[in-house]
Image 1 (tube, rainbow, N blue to C red):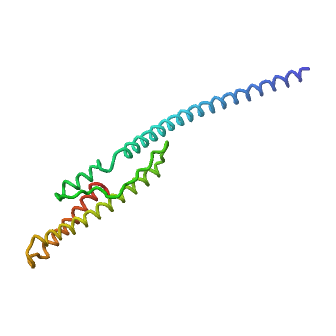
Image 2: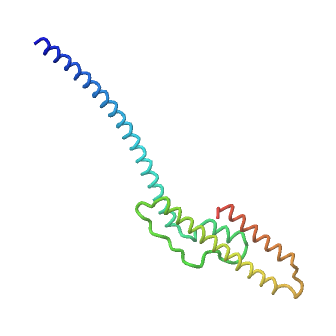
Image 3: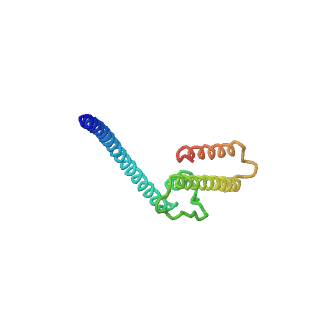
Length: 169
């Protein structure tokens, strides 16, 4: 009987130790889980904030017309020509989706940048042709020299470079 009692006490101590180890392990895992849940909540909040900012940016961008673009206004005023540098084709703005991804927004902005660059180049070429044709009409035959054409060409190229740097085209 004594041996059975000893055996039971030993078993009881063994189970107590196992229980305490299990309790410490659960407590440790519970703390880790709580910390992980807190970090997950912070990450979700950051993600939600970014999505709201992207939605806000996209809705602001899509509601603003191309006519209000400051770079278009600057083009018109800084060249001093009686021309409108507003793109002639209708630019289609996609409807804002509930949760636009960064990649789709990036693709859209890249596409808009390319369209703006094409439009600027086309308008500069048309302005150059128009200016040259007006220049030839206003001057007597044979009075035009190549240096004035080169100056205009250089000025146009310089202006395009400034636009590219300023508006990251």
